[in-house]
Image 1: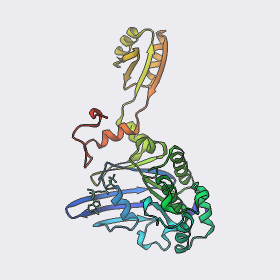
Image 2 (image 1 turned 180 degrees about the horizontal axis):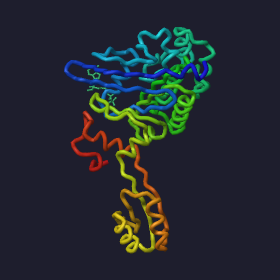
Image 3 (image 1 turned 120 degrees about the vertical axis):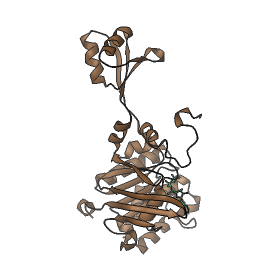
Length: 317
Ligand SMILES: Nc1ncnc2c1ncn2[C@@H]1O[C@H](COP(=O)(O)OP(=O)(O)OP(=O)(O)O)[C@@H](O)[C@H]1O
């Protein structure tokens, strides 16, 4: 299959609603996941991420609305594993099978060429343990096997639920590189995670849920920039003079412990030239970028179904 074949495979969720008794797990949810980029799927516990993914993958029925892959419901795909690869629950594989026999069975039932089994075992770093029973696998090895299974049919759409779960640092880097390269090849990649630093390292775009509803659907950098004011950190030998100067320009520098200054709402391009014009020595000058974690906590502070009673910043470790 070449890149063009993956070109138009979008995920489209339209007015999706799912009720379990009186619980509205997903509520009039509408978003699209585009090919060629990695979309991070975020939200507090109970926000409805797993429910949405289960419906997308035909494991649950919506109360109303649709969740389509390339314009079709999962149940209507003729060869689902060749169109969508998914990792939902890495523990699901049969423990008494070997990694190889597990993948061979999947390949056989989905008309996938047998050579793909060796290819994905190699790609997932499992070639050396392919003959071992899955029950002897660590959580991280199961996770790798789950990802190998997702890639088996060379699908245009890849959906991964918490792919870093249980992986060691090398495994985490591997999944990150893998997701990025799948997106570069033009595939549609949707990845849920609770780890914000992790998500920031691989996602181009974010879809954020809270209490079953859409809270954000936006490029990752826009998401951060719209919620976290930039600031500048600096050191100077003439703090008092620079402070007066900056106050006059509408900034409000604050001295931190250790003699550093921070200036809210400023970038280095604002501060550097002002100091230079006045001949004030600058020993250090750096932008402090907002993080995805800060922006996410800001957005979801009121949204967590099981939120602690105090806001995160005052929580004890
Ligand atoms: N089978 C079910 N029966 C009843 N309620 C359910 C069922 N599955 C999910 N729910 C409820 O639906 C809501 C959304 O749950 P869901 O698992 O989709 O959230 P999530 O965003 O995946 O959470 P987490 O981050 O904890 O995995 C929760 O209130 C949950 O308790």
